[in-house]
Length: 145
Image 1 (cartoon, rainbow, N blue to C red):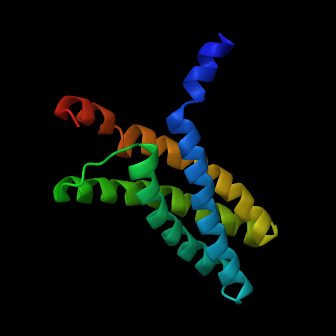
Image 2 (image 1 turned 180 degrees about the vertical axis):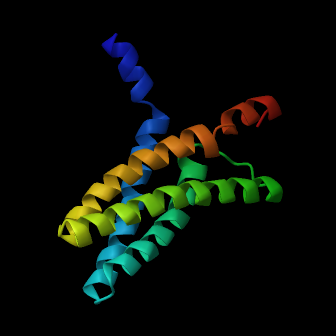
Image 3 (image 1 turned 45 degrees about the vertical axis):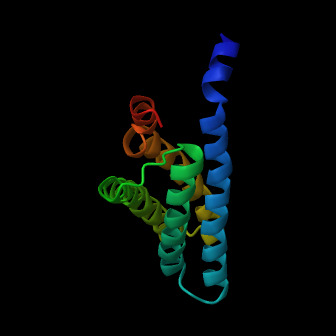
């Protein structure tokens, strides 16, 4: 049973998602920290770091994690919009959580960022897996690509 669970959880997709997620989180954190240290309000820094991370994440998730090489303009537009919409939902949720932690609970803005980063990672994997890149492998198999 453990071996079956291990094979289900430890595979190319999950391992590459974790690696790309770490890199995306690094983009998010670098932009956030640089802006905060430059004196920019943490709420603005969070929004800007989210935008930078979403752009980076779309590219690495599409090409590396889910191996989706469908670049037809209509498909790409639909997929990118779905990706940004899903990330927008998790982005708003984590932004609200961060504001609640910092402003209402008086937590440090970096401690709050750690927590929202973890929540964000899980939500974004679920959205990417079941909604955004869901059909890429079936399309490859049916189109012979």
